[in-house]
Image (tube, rainbow, N blue to C red; front, side, top):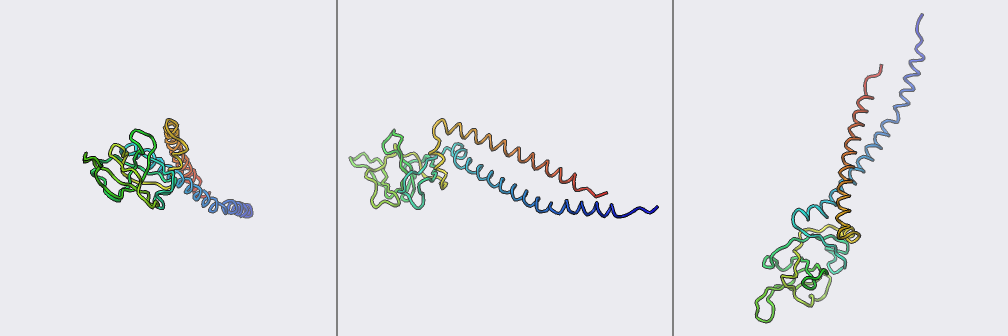
Length: 206
């Protein structure tokens, strides 16, 4: 008896219909995966730029709160400064300094002149000014007030540091680093399982 070919054709038709949507779903999965990895990389870079790199290199991050340094450093900019001797600071450098020695309040302004203090002591002092201000700051800056010279700045990241500060920042930073590490490991594991599943399903039809 000759076998009928109709069931075979029907099976091929169903298989073709089932696989027709695979390229579209695969493209969506790839796009979603690329988006997730892009977000993950941005978070990692934010963590490195705002917390890890300053800590390792001896820098200190500060958030710009006012518009006195626009357009270069608008409010919300994260500026990271590193300690430097006053003799190494020149006109045009941006520094962060205490309004008064020992106080927490700081200002980030540009150095517009270098001179010596009055009174014959010969102490080196700096005159600073905000980029958008019409006049220089009223008081000269002494070395004891200087927290550091600008190392690098990251737009918008300063908003994050204003939301969390002090011990809370340490907890949030540690939790974020742990979460990113766990998430990255999970995504690598998931990608490996998907590749293995794709290879298993890609065998020759029988």
